[in-house]
Image (cartoon, rainbow over all chains, first blue to last red; front, side):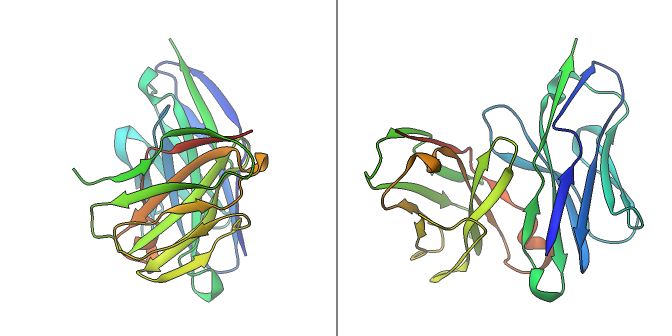
Length: 116
Length: 116
């Protein structure tokens, strides 16, 4: 079985400030990790993914995430946010190997609100 | 434009009145899936399809049916809707049902369903 916990349900931040959205996962097999973003009244779109290799992954719109295997975390960061980053962010995990192969499990979501 | 199209986008119905939410993709994707999104619960998978005529249950299949008669279409059927099926529904697709590619999903814009 696999699971994802997003540690903050809401994160308010001022424009141009840095932000970190926290994500922890559990899995009995090796994992692929993803961050998806949902802008208001839209479907989700892929922000970035970790498959293997370098633990620092860069995505669209200046976001990056770091895979930490020992802490089973995949936190999302941006050094300076913009009003347009206001959205809900979902961390997701997919195990490869065993019975969880290919299944994607989403976290509960973190609502990022950027204030002027 | 490559996209996943869902209809209707908004629907209010009454308990027990059968309804179908359509989903169509124009990307020749093999894998399609339905999710429901509820506050604080993130996205939960209802059903998925690895290819034409191949469907399987996700995490919350009770009260739903699906079919995959053609590669591009994956309708979600609620035979006898109940108020606990009030939710935001997303259809998604990916090129391949295997490996990490199965998790790089293209989402529709969502269908907000209210069951009275």
